[in-house]
Amino acid sequence: MNWNLMNNAMQTLTIELTGNNALKALQDLEQKDLIRILKEPEINSYSLPGEPISDEDFRKWVKYAENSPTLSLNEAKQRWANQKKKLQKPIR
Image 1 (cartoon, rainbow, N blue to C red):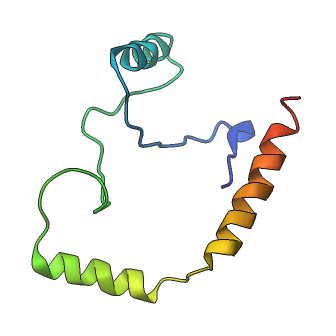
Image 2 (cartoon, rainbow, N blue to C red):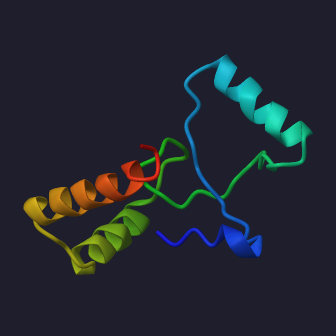
């Protein structure tokens, strides 16, 4: 992931809040003009809750997924382990 925050680039994130305290914390950040909460974000992911999709759209999504590149579970675990090491270095 390329987090180009040095150039004041805007990043859009989708998050799931775990409680009222989380919402309050985000609202506090919005009050300080550090973030902007989108009231109705456009979410085009079938893995998230929302409106039902048509059979045709589902078939298109499956076809897209079948044609997308894959990697082995071992390779994915290794990438995450390497990323975890990189993230933990500055913390210590």
